[in-house]
Amino acid sequence: MNHDRRDPYSGVYDPTRANYPRSETGGAFVGILRRTVHDRGLRLIKERARCIRQGEIHEFIITEEPGAIAGQEVDSIAYLGFAEFSRGGVILCGDIFSVDGQEIGELAGVDETHMPNHMNIVIRGKGLVSGYDRGFMLGSRFTFKSPYPDERLVAASPQTSRAGAQ
Image (cartoon, rainbow, N blue to C red):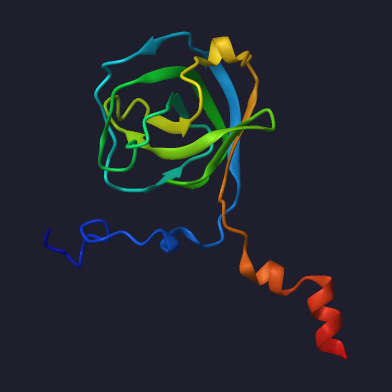
């Protein structure tokens, strides 16, 4: 594969590129879905990061397929629901997705089949179980959080500050 220096996704992807400070983002479910499909053919776009605006509504889908990564196709899925983002931000493949404080999985990628109406946000996790059957409720809160801590905050911890003062 040729590398196009104008397209950061055309070459070999280094996952450490995702290690930059980002705000947690999230919101609440506005529709709970109850369906499982084994031949969906979702095409995850090659881009690993998406900017989300406050107030946008997107569809959440879960898969157990280990090959569910940016740029690949996903077939076996369960629909979780539609949710509105109450806080905009940047979501990136590998971010931890939680609902009502319970970790569900990690962001695998997005499918743009229904754009500009909404994105299909695909989560890779355990259990091909719909949002309805997981017990999600209207108003259930979700978050996306980077798996990487902000190294500057770790370096500025009280222990480090005291050690530097001696």
